[in-house]
Length: 258
Image 1 (cartoon, helix red, strand yellow):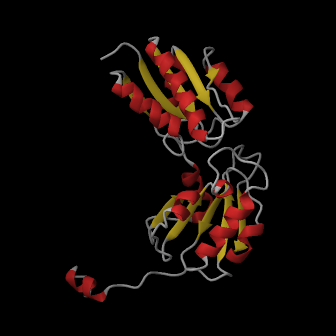
Image 2 (cartoon, helix red, strand yellow; image 1 turned 120 degrees about the vertical axis):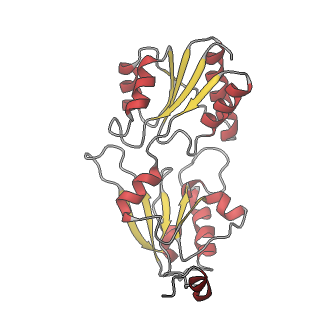
């Protein structure tokens, strides 16, 4: 095993309140702390926990997000190869919509370094709590919105449906205001093949500074989705159209008919 190690942790969605004790311990004891977070307040707070804290490069001038993510992995691996215990901090859950986190873990392990990822509270966890969804009842499907469309994902309209990054549909670079309209129009058209136009859906954003601010929970009819106000952190939740039918033959096979 090579000298040096990598631990990747998440801040959770809410500043301070979502950071696990395990993540905080790794942040404090790291020989070098690197971070990619959503706001300057969190960045300053991390610097109070560990004075070595340094922001990862995030070049929004790139035509492709993948290039920027590659630069972030390169910086993490540069620190790991220099030796010592390296901790990289990502916003939310470090394994959810965080390509650089997965890329760095994989690269570190390929090179023989110890690499560990600790879970954090994700936007999906917040969504379940804020909207009042139990994914164990009826099932839950979760897709990145562009992937959902271009791969013609099969889904069950009788289950909960969550679509992420609806403001970035078709966008391989970085968000530009107004660019979301075409994607939302296409998404609404596709969804209306399985749901009625007046089906109530939810534009959701988790609360970052609770209790200072509240989560965004906007109920709108599906047909008005193209005119909806969304941001880069907006998620679309589509409730089931109703319960799925019960297979009576299966009920008998399972002894549930009595």
